[in-house]
Amino acid sequence: MKYFIKRIALVIFATVFIACGEEEKKEEKQPRPVKYQEVGFLGGEKVRSFSGTARTDKIVNLSFRNSGIVTVFDMKLGQKVKKGQLLAKLDNVQSRLAYEQAVTQLNSAASQMNTAKLSLNRVRSLYEKGSASLSDFEAAKNSFKTAEESHKSAKRGVDIQAEQIQYGYIYAPEDGIIASISAEVDENVSPGQAVAVLNAGTDMEITLGLPESIINGVNQGMDVAVGFTSLGGENFKGKVTEVAPAVDANTSTYPVRVTVTNPTDAIKTGMAATVTFDFADHKMDNTVLVVPAHAVGEDSNGRFVFLIEDDGDNAKVKKQQVVLGSLTSEGFEITSGLSAGQKIATAGLQTLLDGQEVRMQ
Image (cartoon, rainbow, N blue to C red; front, side):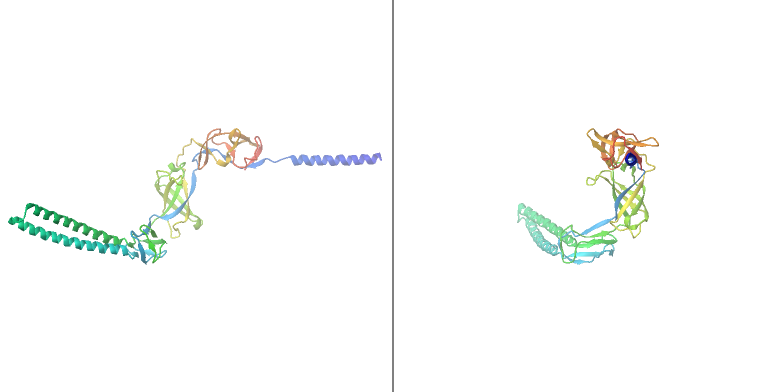
């Protein structure tokens, strides 16, 4: 009986020992992998890419300068037109009526001027004979002068109304291609209302906006690389043609235009483009440190980052308090707490602990 009890005790002891060993093995933890980034300067990246939109260098919104109903509309999408070609016409009812009224007023003014001239000649003859007073002669001259001015004014009115009739026609201002249409025959349009868009340019441009951190590194004539999402891996060359000196209030960026120097017919207006700038030869202002916005946390002591201390074999994270400056397109400016080249964790700040061992990846 005693022998049996001893065997049971040995079995229980062995089981407990094995279980404890397994628990100890389970408690062994591997260093946690973390993503990291070296602290760098604002605008320090040598190659930067930005999105833009393709368009021809000259886009004309076609519109009438008069109101009325469209009677002729000789435009179709993709149609090639020549300079001076008649594209659209209004009924011009109001303009023609105004022109006829102006002609009637001109005829009336001409009749009044002729009558005043005859009266002046008659009074002059009587005055020379002593049969009319000087005041009668002066009154006749003033009447003729007034009638003459009225005739000149009426004549200018006819010219203006004749020009108004021409405002009811649209002629192609340049050779080009009709890119869009927004009106039809029998539609009532108003002055300045765009009825079509003409792509009249010969060059293809990319319009985009750049942040203030790199705008000083961009100059007219700078060579860039251009790619289009819809054209696969085909690459094009470009040249910066315009750099705005002031920021766009709507986008908070500086508008820039890039001309594609080797365009093809495959590039269409409105296509999404990627413009790549190489600042390898440009000296950036290495005075402002910057870290990604998502690498910055906040606790009761203020803002912090997890600094990675790497001694070669092991790496640990250290909660480092920092003082932030402005938020830029590249992240937060750092005014104190870090130096260039230090490594910081860029993900999982909520689960990292001060002093925790990590594995950089």
